[in-house]
Length: 434
Image (cartoon, rainbow, N blue to C red; front, side):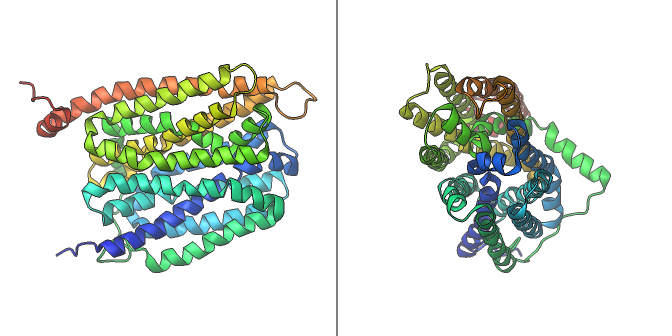
């Protein structure tokens, strides 16, 4: 007989997993406020600077499906421990990097370690909490983990200016060492066993699992939801937000850091609200996401069309609306969870998690290339007109993502009607057609 999870133990395990994810986000975002300093330290151009984030996000995205398969096979605890060790070692290496290639290799492994955290924490949530609480705990994991980006904004700015590059990054790496021990001691895969292994999958089994997950329109809908909503806030927080506000909008360093903090607080504020909405009206999850995409695109259009620099209040509106994209992207994981059996949830989660990061790395690379293109030779910094061109690249991705969301929500609803007519009727509020 399976022992029921104890609430106190479940909460403790989740808090440790959340702390690991928090530090992963901190490591991931720590370059966001150090972009200009990194360009000077390594003597690199805008496109070379964007390569840091592109490489990190590319590795993160490419790792998602393998990580999902690893979690389904070896359990979240082992994968989380491995990821924490890699992440901590990579951040420590980045602290001492004194060349562009050394720094690139360190960020490569930051991406590897980062990729092995979030899927593990979501699997722990699925295991340790009752079904009715999973949407809320999923949202809380995402939004509270983003506090790591807050720590990478104002505190990291202070650390870089006060302690210097090496000591600031050593301090962040030390947090990972503490959490490695905490994970080893506290985290369990289930109430019965510290580590739980799934069935061994050969190449044929892996192929079948990936095929079954990807072929379900609910997984694809979740992928495009994540693709469309996350990348704007991610690109702002990871690299281009600080230069955009300082050089494109003429703000001070302190104000730019504050705006990035407001964006993260917005992510946190909307998370519980969106969790309640999708629990109360699961049929309208895609509608909520489409409204968020439209709001973000419209706000960016106003800021970029503003004559000269946009006023501070408009930039506050921008980061608040962009912050909505974080919890909206988490809705995609709820689609994956409800569209796949438990033994395939981590694989589906990995597929969906690729979406936003593929969009983010594409956007980060395009912004760097467009900035270099629109910045005259010999000019120090990036002119405001160059940022207008560069940030406009986002509209292409929103158009693609919104079209795909509309397409796959129709297919997903048709699949639900075929597979479970009673649930279709319950969620849609309509009788099953004859």
